[in-house]
Image (cartoon, rainbow, N blue to C red):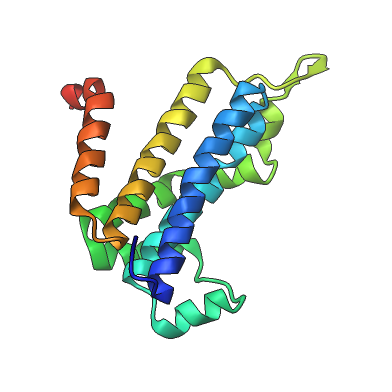
Length: 179
């Protein structure tokens, strides 16, 4: 349960969408529809970034305008605002946006990456490998983790946030042990 302010509802709804995109990617991968799973990474990243921005940066009028059907600022502006407001957490968002945005767009909008993944000599078929797919799932799992932490933060649930953190560390301990 959380305070049902407009700011909280928008943030939690977008974090929830972030989690849903990850779940949908698993369904698509389970059905060997990998290109469409890759296409969901950008909307998942957008949902997470917008959730964070609407929670900590947006003015009341920006929130009202968005809920009324208006567009939020462009992703570059959101990422920049988050970097200024949140420091290192926001810098990570800005860094991912700067380094991966073109690829995310190519996956989502049928760019060259999607074409190259299908044009196999004299046949057309998807060719995303298990390694590519596992990298996608890892990236999406990280965003889902951050989305779940975002929900816990909005709800003021420090115990839940700590439990999520501990569970995440346990699952990904192999990765963290290498760092």
